[in-house]
Length: 607
Image (cartoon, helix red, strand yellow):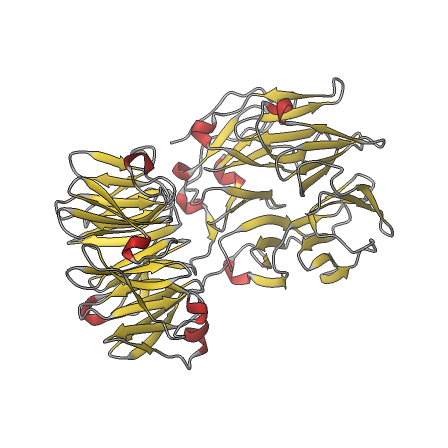
């Protein structure tokens, strides 16, 4: 569904060209990451693989991916957390809601349909047909054909962060939460704490051991076997089976054998009081960061890792399947185009380059994390990271070593002024200027309130602006710093600060745009589309011809001075929580996301 909004922004931008409705799923190109495997579930001859980039359907007979399902009409979000099935119905829980797949149809539910239905972490079927869905921070949603009930701390649930649910029988349901284990039994809430032999901690998983016992996985504490009726819990000795005794996931097969996946490597089974490790001599198995384990048909056990590796174990034999993806992670924090038209993507610990297709993706540098990525007026690309400051000139990356006493700071933000001087904000709340030869500190540590400087902007009046991590806005006029506190912005946090095509400064809060008026020295509030429709405002970008792009938690809004265009899931955009925006020289719109990689489309397709 296409939506248009009237907006008063003529004081800010004025571009004659207007964008009209358009754009479909087929028009978009995606660079995503599906290597972080969070959920596995076998349905017939198909292995459903839930990742941070949607669902992969892997045919176990032909040994190939036969289909992918991304965020859109069939999936509320790409970040998949849990998959379960009963008969021919498959339920998939994501960070944005639930999908119910049947042979003939798919139904999607979000928090807009059912209160609390987001950040789904686990799903369990009840004996009477009720579906229990545990969420991270919103409690439990119990759903059946007649009604929906939400269960939270107000109803005596131990905590609203629920990692696992087990239905013991028609009378008892167990809930593993971040504060411990509890149960709803015969209309009464029961809490299992130290008296039951369970240490305090996050209860991450439940797996049924036999008719009365459960294995309970406690983060950092190990695995316990627990009887919810009478016995105290017994700790299962790991005996150095896993690095740091840290287990990520557990499952139990039909023979009541316990299977465990190591968070820092290793897969093993436990039966008759003994552990057995598998393929420990294989570095891929031994060193993988495993995330999930499930028992499939015919006794096959599947393990999924954060690096795109799936291991299957049957009769002691281990097989490996690799699902590598184009991006190294789902987070794309910045996008820059170099003078030759090469696109540079800040992707987790890597800076990647591409000509516009996944086949040309290559690693430029590995820097731990890209804090800031910008292009200078002369076309050089600058990058700041935990490892220091880098400059790319004539295709070569050079280390820049600031001569600053007592030591060089960690820069989180970079900006160039009209004179070509580089301004940088540090993690200690300092602001520096580099004229090409000398570094000068313009704000001492703690001189500007609000902590680390996450954005720096230089406007047409050569005023320097700094945005603190807590949302405070600060202005340097050559004589000193002036702070604009939350009261200047309706007591809300500022998320982004940008220079407009006219040289002014624009700020973005959750649902409001602000423009600084140099004449009155005041921030002026501008009208904008309702965040209830487009999501919370997060990112601001201006292209070469002056169009303004607003990245939100749900998509992108484009302003061209005459019209406003909202681009969301209904336009084929498979991603949420926008982190970066860029329009390249070929008039292609690039949109980076917090978890969903990057999307690209020609602006011509949006007209």
